[in-house]
Length: 206
Image (cartoon, rainbow, N blue to C red):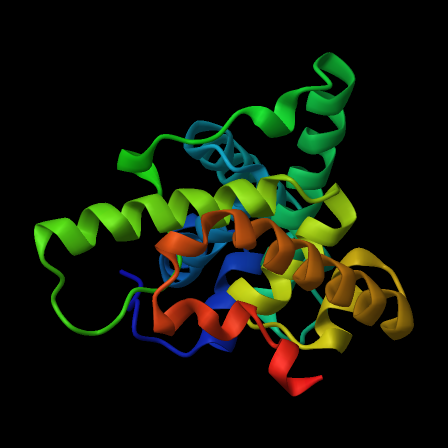
């Protein structure tokens, strides 16, 4: 019986020796984060679930190649690559993919204010979440990846560069353009933006 509370390195070693139970214990720690990454990149809950599952299968098969370091970043790199491949596939099949938005009921959305919202506030927040996701969806795939990895998942520039096999200057440039595009996009939803979300507008800091 695997103790899910064991330290990460021990579980990784057990999983690399063939323990599916140990691998599952590892995945339980990160599957929500991985799904969130996939959802933010793909913008569709079903596609995100499929991509997460494919990434986890790939991770298990490639576990012997993990040579140490940040295991979460290693998993995130795999799910990011799966999502990137899916975006390219969908782009080939239908050029208007970015116009398809996820339903509000399945939108995990951006972090919400800590206070308990009223039904009216919840409705407004759901609209805001859809607006944010719509703006993220409107980005090109390269910009969308770095924005999600940085501003949603909290990875450093270097971690993002390692994940997408690019240099720091390119990552910073893509992220700057992505943030600017999202800010401009959200101007079309100005009535939905409470003070908590005005961080998207940093014009006063320039």
